[in-house]
Amino acid sequence: MSKYDQLWQYIKNNKTGDFELSFDEVEKAAEVEKAAGLPIDHSFLRYKKELPDYGFEVKKISLKNKTVKFHQL
Image (cartoon, rainbow, N blue to C red):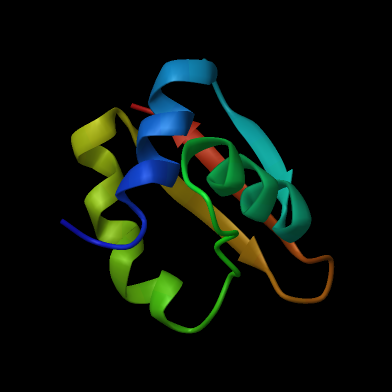
């Protein structure tokens, strides 16, 4: 179990197709699933490999725009 499991579950339960979330939206989505927010940090790059188990993949992370693009598998 990783610190991003709750976020991955949120995405699986609430999203279909390809979509994009801002870093703030990612943190808010994590808040829905657990008490504390989950900031995007460098460890996100390591943990994103878990997302295919939930039917999605991280397509692109834009540090400039502070967004994450997701693709449904």
